[in-house]
Length: 65
Image (cartoon, rainbow, N blue to C red):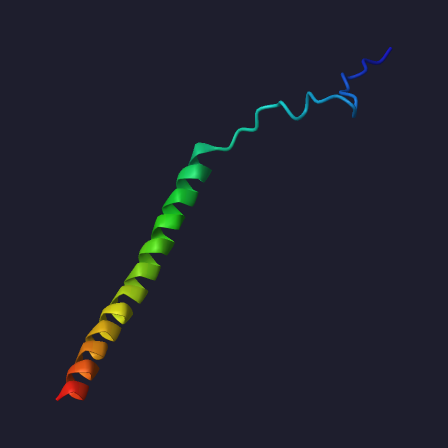
């Protein structure tokens, strides 16, 4: 005699209420990777923005004189 496993019928909503667990290391890793990407973008763009502002100021001063 074989044992039949319990089967949740497809019409049941029990599967939607099940708790899905994500490992903590994956959450912390994703947050760390996001921080590194944001810092890398800021390190690239911030000097370009400052240089553009300085060049705009120099251009404005050169045009007024």
